[in-house]
Each structure stands twice: as structure tokens, then as C-alpha cells.
Length: 148
Length: 114
Image 1: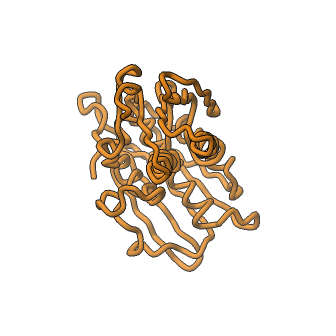
Image 2: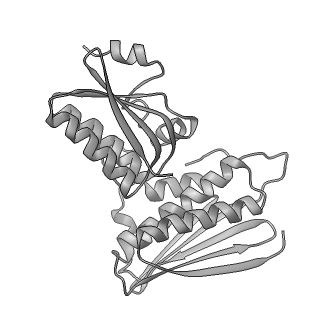
């Protein structure tokens, strides 16, 4: 897999969410990830972009979301940045806790962590940077099971 | 593919046949409105047939939870029918599979209402 980087600057809209998901699907497919892994990558990107558009930029038309895909030899690195106030990770409840199971939101980061090999969230006063990494597994490794 | 919902009656139970994607935006709103409309009309035995739902995101999962609790809070009952593997797996990892009453057979789902 040749190293290559592509980035996009996107509006804070619902269309951006669908567009980001589609780009992720196409790139992951081109890189040869299996069907399940493509779904996991595209869903993680969708969830990350939803957070950037809704919770970060709050649909503000003056704020942008940047999405970058970096193809490295052994991994796909995806970076999503917003221009919001940043989030307090300590205030994000565990969606698997019994008292949270019937909550209607709060599962996005959990799903990203379930589907990707590495999830890094760097909140700051100028926005949040989310880094998602999926390792390229050899043919014998097959699809990666979802993990906590 | 956007979401489509059609409803039919079987032995006093409303089957909502859903197809497409239940995601943030239109899909989630359609599901929410559809369930609330049924409950407002007094149709409180609801089965969501998800056989043709090929994609669901965290907002869609939240909408399923909302439909389930809204029905319950109004004295109704909502069951899920015919989950695709993707939706099944998502409900498993979010530990919601055992929260919902999930059925694989429509006749059994209808019969399961008290």
C-alpha cells in the first residue's frame, strides 16, 4: 500500500456526515479491507463526523470540519477535526452501564472504540481532534473482531 | 438509500416494515414519527420488522431505544423482528440485544403479545 494523504474541508451539515462515510467506504475498499472492516471503518468515520458536526461545531455554518485519510504501509489513519469548544471526556458516561443502557444517545465514541484499533481524542479550546487508526491485517488474520 | 416504512395489521398487532437506513436525520425522524403516530391512535402492540434495514448508526440505535421506552411508558409493547446480521451485532456489542424483545418469526412475534 503506497503512502498517500488526502484531506477535505467540509461544512457542518448532515450532508457532510453522509459524504464522510462514503469517502471512508471508498478508501477502505480501495485499500483492500474486508467487507466487515470496511463497514467498521465507515461507521467509525460516520460517528466521528456526527460528533464534529453536531457536538463540536453545532451546525455552525462558519465552522468547518476537516477530514483526512492517510494511507501508511501498515495502517489507515483517519483524522477528523472540528472547531468547537472541545469535549470533556470525563463527562462521557459508559453506555454499557446498566443505568445508561436505555439512554437514547452517548454510543458514538463507544462504537468507534469497538470498531477501530486506535481511537485518540484530543480536546482543546480550538476544537477537538479525533484520530482513528485501523491496522492492515494479513490475509490469515481475517477480519478483526469488535473489542472493547 | 433513504428509509421507508409501511404499516399493516396482523391479529391486532401493527407490523411496521422498515427498509433502508436508520441514521441521524430523516431515517431516525421517520421511525420516531411512525411509532408516535401509532401510539397516538391507540395501536400499542407494535412489531418493527427490520429485515430490510441494512444500516443503522448510533442515532438509529438511540431511536430504537426511544421507540421501545416510549411504547412501554404509554402502556404499549414494541418488539423487534428479523434483524440483519449487522443490526444484530450492533445490538450485541451495545448490550441492547437482551433489552429488546427480539423475534425471528413474524407469527411468533404476533403471538407473543399478551
